[in-house]
Image 1 (spheres, one colour):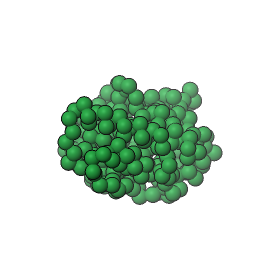
Image 2 (cartoon, one colour):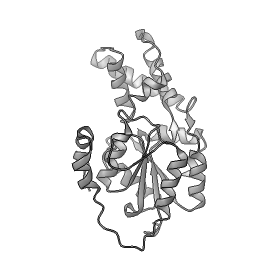
Image 3 (cartoon, one colour):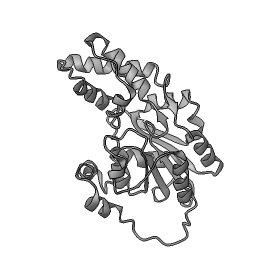
Image 4 (cartoon, one colour):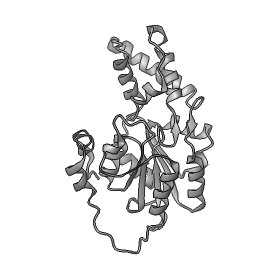
Amino acid sequence: MHSLATPTVVFDLDGTLVHTVPDIAAALDCALADYGCGPTSPAEAATMMGDGLSEFFWRALVAKRLALPAIEADATRKRFIAAYRKTPAHLSEVYPGIRELLLELRERSVLTAVCTNKVETIALDILRALALTDLFDAVVGSGGDKPMKPHPAPVQQAVARAGGHMERSLLVGDTGADNGAAIAAGIPLVLLTYGYSHFPIGSLRYGTAVDDAAHLREHILAFVSEDTSLPKATPPFVEIAARDEPDMLRDYAAPYRLAA
């Protein structure tokens, strides 16, 4: 494990590093081909993102007003995930400026990790296909009964796998799941407004919202260059979040706040 002074930056994947919804929408259309549903646009798919592939699928059934028997619905969900697993990065693209930012962080010896609610093996396939794998020290995704964001455990695991320390870590994301995870884990947060949030990122009072990779770079480098020799007051984010967050975000993060 590196020294306490070594910073770790943890990134979400979908809507933060990579524009993935075109491939997800294509896989959904493939799975629903026999039901006469219209094509799913990337914009429509983006509104259902943030909580893993299975939750995306259930939201899609509701959005398309498709009432299937439980067994048939679950079988269709599995076909959707299988279709997506085959080509998870055929249409996906790294957001502008992100690759350059990651390269710069590597040059500065900053520890980096991915923490996503996507199935971990699929996340690894995407990073590999887009030549991003070597830019990260760790990748943590969902699978089995592992908790997902907004639970803090995946973020904590990502930092640990990367060799970093929570006391010197920053989370970068784009949804309420990232907001809740940062609050619960007790670390600072930067949210990207171009991602897949179900509500305006600007409505959140915890964390900093930025519009692009250039502004993200500014905030990350400010965090990286922070003087860790100076004494710090206990961060008030838990109290601030509990008092000022919109009700829906307060409810979203509350079960995990201050979790071990």
